[in-house]
Amino acid sequence: MRQRALQTVLLVHAIEQSDLAGDALSHEDRAQASREAADGRALPAADDPPAQLDGRSERFLARRADALLVRLRVRSPGVDRVLAAAGGSTGLDRTLLLLGFLLGVALAFADGGGRIDVFAYPLIGLVVWNLIAYIVLIVRAFRSPRQGDQPAAVAAAPAAAAVQHDGFFRRWLARTYANRVRARIEALISHSIGFNAPLAPGLRRFAADWWQVGRPLFRERSQRILHLAAILVAIGLMVGYALRGWILRQAAGWSASVFGPASAHTVLATLYGPASAVSRAPIPSAHDVQALMWSGPKTGGGPAGQWVYLIAWTALLYIVLPRLIAVIITTLSLWRHAMTLRTPASFSGYHAAVLRSLSAASESPPTAPSG
Image 1 (cartoon, rainbow, N blue to C red):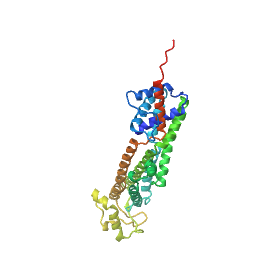
Image 2: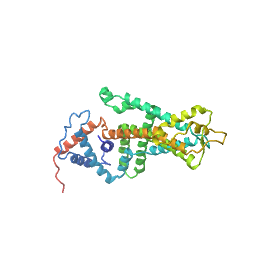
Image 3: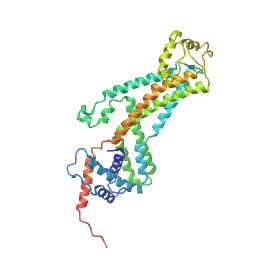
Image 4: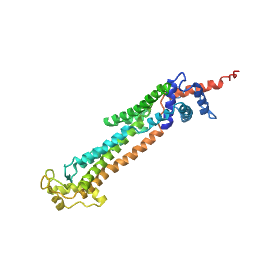
C-alpha cells in the first residue's frame, strides 16, 4: 500500500479502535463511509479473513479511510498536521545538515593555523573516510539477501532483514529518526488535546503504529541524511579553504616534517592528479613545490589560489559526486518503499470486521421515521 494511503488507514483504524463510544468518529459516519467505499464495487466475503490483504481489500480500506478523513477534517483540522508530521522531515534533518557544514568549515580552519598546508590533511582524512564508507556500502549491497533466496520468515519482513546488515550507528540513527517523528506527533497531540480530547488516544495509537510500520522509510531517510551530511561536510571544507585562501589571503606551503623534497611532489601529484585532469588546473612542478616549503614559523610559501582550486575539485570528485549518486539511489529506494509498504497483519481482521458491519447494516430492515 502507498505511504499516504496506509497512513490514512492507520489513522482511521487507530481512532476506531480507541474510540469505541463513537465520540470522535460516530458510528453513523463509519457506516456511511463503508457504504461509500463499497458503492458499486465487488467485495470479498467477510468470513475467514486472509492472512494478508489483497489489492482489492486494501483499496476498499483506503477509500473508506479517505471518506472518514474528510469528516475528521471538519471537526479537527489538526489531523492533517499529524499526517504531515508522520511523513515529512524532522528537525533532525536540518540539525545534522547544519552540523555537517559547520564541521567541514571547522576542519578547514583547523589545518595549519594561519597558513594553508598544500597537503590538506583534513581533506585526506575525509577522502579516506569516504572511501572506506563506499567499500562498506558496496560489500553490504552484495551481501544483502535476494528476495528469492530468503527463507519465508525473512521474506515476510525484508526491512527487518535489511536492518541486520546496518552498522550500529545507522541502526541508532534510524531509531532516533523514528523517535523524532513520533515526538513531533506527540507534540501536536499535546497542543490540540484541549480542542478535541476524544481524538487524542487514537492519535497516540496511530503514532505508535506508524513507528512500527514506517521502519523501512525511517531507515532510508536516515541513510539519505547521512549522505547529504557527508556532502555538506565536503562543501563546508571547500568553503573554509576558499575563505582562507581568497578572502583572508593566507599563504600556502608545506613543512618537511612529514614529506621530504623528493617525495612531496609525488604525493601531491597522486592526491590532486584526478582533480588536475578534470579541471585542467596544473600541479606545480617539483621545483615549484620545493619553493613552497616553509622557511620559518611565519615565512615561506606562496599564493593559495591554485591549491584552493585543487582542494575543491578533489573534494568534489571523491566526496560530493559519489555521495550525490548515493543520495539518488537512496531516494529511489525510499520512493519504492513508500509505494509498497506492507499492511499490518491485524488489518485482515479489521477488514473482516468492517465488512461484517457493512453486511449487518445492509441486511437490517429500515426503521420507520418517527413522527
